[in-house]
Amino acid sequence: MARRPLSLSGQGPAIWAVDPWSPAAGGTRQLLTTTERSRLAAIASIVQFRKGAVIYREGDHVDAIFNVIRGVVTTYKKAPNGNEHIAAFLLSDDLFGLSEEGRYTNSAKAITPVAAYRLPVIALRSCLSRSAELEFHIICKLCQEVRQTQRHAFLLSQRRAVCRLVMFLQLIEQLQISRGEQMDEIYLPMDRSDIGEYVGMTLPAVSRAFRSLITRGIIKVLNGRHVRITDRNGFEKMAGDSIETSGIAQNPSS
Amino acid sequence: MARRPLSLSGQGPAIWAVDPWSPAAGGTRQLLTTTERSRLAAIASIVQFRKGAVIYREGDHVDAIFNVIRGVVTTYKKAPNGNEHIAAFLLSDDLFGLSEEGRYTNSAKAITPVAAYRLPVIALRSCLSRSAELEFHIICKLCQEVRQTQRHAFLLSQRRAVCRLVMFLQLIEQLQISRGEQMDEIYLPMDRSDIGEYVGMTLPAVSRAFRSLITRGIIKVLNGRHVRITDRNGFEKMAGDSIETSGIAQNPSS
DNA sequence: CGGCCGGTTGAGTACAATCAATTCTGGTGG
DNA sequence: CCACCAGAATTGATTGTACTCAACCGGCCG
Image: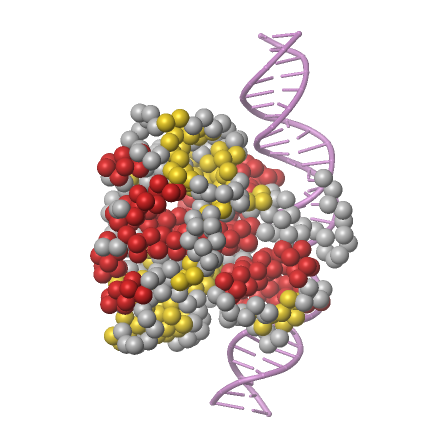
């Protein structure tokens, strides 16, 4: 909430993504050059939000987009029946503030304490129009965004609950690996309810799916938020099974 | 399949989308100027596909992206259990060929006869790097893409089948309205099976959901592919209900 | 006419939603 | 330090919905 002029934190806005076209150009990395970052810093301010704070609401007039520095943000939408659906988790170096005809298409809230750059669209647009290079980097990030959202949709299309949960864990793990964080265990910055709203199941169902994986010896959960995969093979298998509840290896006929 | 040098069909590649930031700048419209289109035409070739033809496969090396001229394309992914999941339906003036590190992230196939521009990425990149304006239009289109994919995910997060189907019909209707096609009835260019793979249900379930809407007098189906909404009010209601099977108007307490 | 394909319908079952009770956990104050 | 509380998370019992498998229909083409 507290908005203050850009101080000396970081080197300016940052975008973490992968070039869609260069084969394996170092995988995911920082796309912006230092000059681009400082140019963006010139138009940005830093904003901070407490855990739980709503950053904007669906339908609000858009005058800025955001770039996460620290913490976790979710974008979400209320279903007509009252359920909330989480569209995405945004981590550091992610962008958020997607809009349509000048209105935000989702609401956004901080699920941890958050610091972010606030980039006014007017200034940003003129900044973009002067640099094809910078725009190209935005294009790369947007492609990343589309891929991520497609993976989310793919996850949601799975019928079995455990399967959805496993794919979710894979998603988060992939995210953390690409950011170079610890690879031996998965850290979940969100609570069970958030997970449920993301994977399209109720809170009890999330809990049961976790239990199912634990009793099968596939994962181990430490503080509720630290997950360690104890049976990588079974884990991957779990992502794509239809009915085979236990290991009753039914022959893949046809 | 038949690739031939660009002839005199159309005025070159086209992109149909909405500027995310200008409030109601004419809604969805043609983003590219005629000079941009002819500049792209210079590097494009026209390709055609028969109904059912696979255009590329997930994991193939990427050397071009595509811009639909006529017909309908789907991008899809095979689930580990064998189910196919449709990520998107692409219509005229849409782009497809999303990739990651030089590999297509989905497969693509024509579900009707299709004509498309084929834009080699190498040429396209150098074309983009010379025009910030053009890149900005691509950015707008990508934002559109993200929104559309988020709507898809939102649809998939709904639990009731009829609800998903109604949201699907709304999606298609919205698409056709924004393109200025006939608004009195919805035309479905895809078959029931495709619908099922998009909305995450089995073919019988799709059929039953249609029947449910028909017997309730909410829609009327003509040739299987032409849908007319006879009870707009009930239709919208249907999009967001939890259990209320019939019209047992239970008071919206709280 | 017979087969094939897209689509519909029917019966039984499995999975997750619902509602509700209970445990666990972290934080607060006595 | 412990009792207490509130919120998060787990577990239990029941019900409903959509999946599965299978039969059936209607149009189209050979």
